[in-house]
Length: 112
Image 1 (cartoon, rainbow, N blue to C red):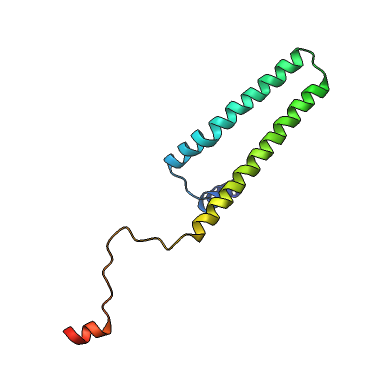
Image 2: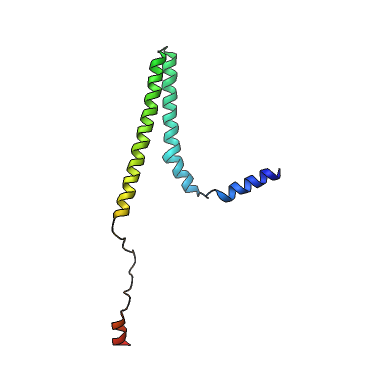
């Protein structure tokens, strides 16, 4: 029981804390589309198996799905790297609020 409490407290303390809106964003942008895609894949495989198609056709479909997922993931990661590189090359960002000029020593001597 003490080991359970230790592991529970250790996990709670080391994992990042996520807000409700972050969970919702993850759910809408990742989990729901993935679950819909999974339902479509499973339904297609079931239809293929009920229509007595050959194993080669079913295997080709499953392999095609895997290849499409890998290609999509690769393209997504490549676009993320490209956008990060473009953001890093950009100019120094301007502050969104007015910043007063630092007085020079000459101005201090004249007014001082």
